[in-house]
Image (cartoon, rainbow, N blue to C red):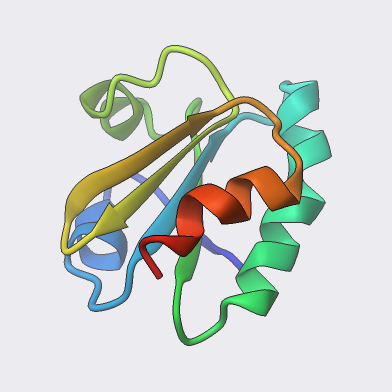
Length: 105
């Protein structure tokens, strides 16, 4: 299952993580984000122990969303050792998301 992150715990959960971290930037009102949610949960379950999956509500964590230049949602950013290594925008099929992630996990 994914971990909810916000402005207060983002550094601890994402930047300081030993595992690569996929952060799903989303909002409750965003229909594509809601359609992507089950895919994110599947990815989280299938990559347990190799990838940490977090969800960040852009309406509740505006500072972090702004810091990473989130202009449209859903956007997923993969962090490795605290650095952005992949950015995926849009509600893509699971296979396409996994293709982009597989090089990093």
